[in-house]
Image 1 (cartoon, rainbow, N blue to C red):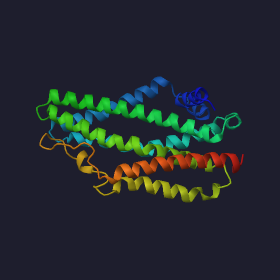
Image 2 (tube, rainbow, N blue to C red):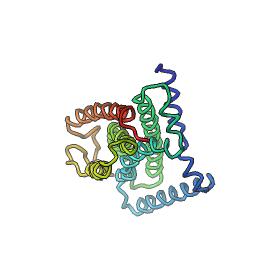
Image 3 (cartoon, helix red, strand yellow):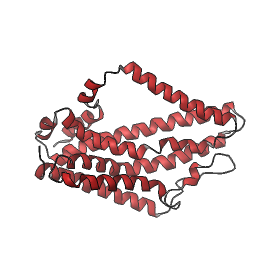
Length: 258
């Protein structure tokens, strides 16, 4: 597969609009979905502003709103493969004249790029919100904004760094659903969901929660306040990601049951 073809496959995944079958069941106009999102956003901003006005908001704790990212990217990965079966396009997808490991990798990369863009957007919006707070309320200052942004970079770096493995595991769950290994799915669901929940219970030396619990200029957040083991663990996760993607290609080649 040449580079141009692979880019086209990634672009196709990046622009994917979801399940046609679900869209046919849920006929909600796009304008209504936008209205719902704006209402939720307004409610969140209103709640945070209320606590900020009453001097009860630790601004670094705002990053907790992104704690759902690991679960979200897992199900993004799961859905990107499942969608081929929901849209009845799996036959077209699997008969493309390219190695199935490459087809899987293109899906994985498309999801990861979406996540990276989402991370940047979340960082910009939340940083802008805190900057406005620092201008409008005497309780917060520009040093607080800097502390907030550093804490966000620290946390979102973890999300971006470990999400490749989480995405690939979500895709693996969906691939196994269509293979002869299907009977082990219940066990895998328990293992994977339990593993995701354990991410937030790791010791402070691995994931420093203190950086998300401080919000005053008296406390200076450190750049990447993690132990030296973390980059090694992240590197191992990338190697595992490669192995999981290759394994999915093998399953689609040798163990597929349509």
